[in-house]
Length: 227
Image (cartoon, rainbow, N blue to C red):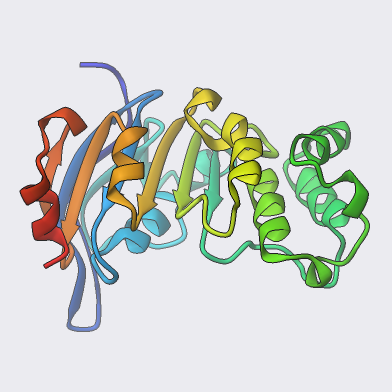
């Protein structure tokens, strides 16, 4: 078995009396893409937040990039890129200022900022405050922020939301399969997620419905997640 980038065993997390994740186990090899499917409230975002070291599990064991969480979270935070529902950008700063701020946090040369602004084709609007940009432009900036420090693990929550086909094509080399990075993708579009996944985790009410390769899944198994 290939070395694991992510290894979860019996992972559980609750909020009050509600169980957001209930004994979730999965092994994701280095360089693989895991698609996480399920309806709203299934536990997808909670799982990403735990993997991003932003949330502690209440039970079970989790290893990310070889380090146990939450104990060694500090060792892996700099190797994780999180693209969440919120862009995690300062609205009153420009795109260039936002990326430069994150570059300084990660001790990344400012040349990387200019490289990414060119990659997402936002050089012409790079000095405008984020609050004046369209949702698609903000999402492109969020993609650039996510990969700024060349993370080893990408956690992508609906990564192509607000991106038209042309913008999605710009993002592909950065966060798509072409990036060559281990990825965890959540999606409300099973067909699109299956097309780029090596492994699929189906969640329903916080529990594992299945862990399977895309070729081994049928429509009934996926449909049960959404009923």
